[in-house]
Length: 478
Ligand code: TYD
Ligand code: MG
Image (tube, rainbow, N blue to C red; front, side, top):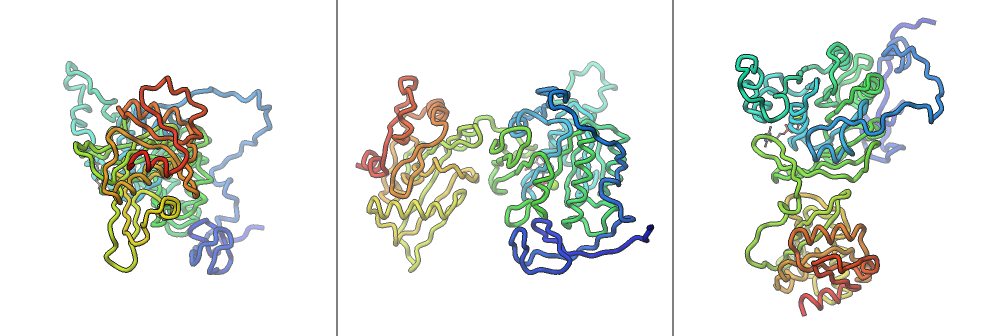
């Protein structure tokens, strides 16, 4: 039966991609409200998605021991932070999604990586013109032109950084069919797509950026990556709620999801692996946005601590661990009498519900009258920390501000605070101690429950093990 092209519309949840024949107020799959939008789907002669790329090969089952593999074959990105977050470099044939808010520096990071790598790279942009990309490239590497005409001056010393982007090709295109055709001709070693929301596939007739388009384009790129073994990086925008725009479904399809975070007004950016089929998730890289691109920060503790001369009240240093990397960060608190009826509570870079919990513990277990006080918390550097080990440091900065007594210099904290005011153990405490010691701290407060596993004679830093929040406060504020 050979039917004519059939037009069909359906409703899709813009958050998770759930398909429904009629409009629904609440998505049965992800339970978000008012997320359905109508999209037109044109099924090209009723064929299945897999048939579009002309895959005729039939795969046979193979014994797992007979599958060929090359253990550690990865392409280094020449960027230590990105390599670490990817789990040691790019895996051939992988599809990596890089998410982040607009203006955070996604295009800058990937263009910069593409310019550093001595590989043949296809950078596809659906957002910017060739001239705009060239302008950005010049900003990242002002001597780009001089590098290119080395043939004119053969005596000159080679450029220090990479190959001067001589293997980087820019394509401004949004149709996946055209992009894949060009990629097959060019045979690059890496493809970068900026961004998935601008792509459209001719197989589906809905606007670029809609769930069905994003999903179909990702599926096409995924097939391309797996068949050609060429790794593909995709940039994806993030919605206001912090989700990768459109479908959460993308996260299931790709191999690795990286998220670029940070406050646009601060210079530091955090690159986080949310999902990684080829490495540890929760791995983290720190960048600093400079006038000429992103610079990896390999000693984040040193930059995140403010260089202060005098002791200030309300400031405490905590040792956190992101991924496998310990980092010292500074927390600041301001506690002041509330002028309005309702006290204000605000936390930047920290979960405000957790802050309220800590305030309640202080009120109930230690008798501090914080109920009528405004409390503001801030984690310096504009980064966000979820590690509960900063609880103890936060509590100490709150008390320090409340009492207006600065904490002793060269003292830092790593402990989780429980509801009854007990200090709970944290993971990888040795690494935290070593990092605090490396940065010249003299005292570290940890949980009594962490003490057992430790051989303290190895460290120069004084490690004080405490069991209850009252003990810490007693020892610090008398
Ligand atoms: P961009 O990479 O365009 O962000 P995204 O692709 O995530 O939307 O980054 C844009 C911002 O970065 C812009 O505000 C300017 C700033 N920037 C620098 O500070 N230094 C640089 O070298 C470059 C290229 C951009
Ligand atoms: Mg961009």
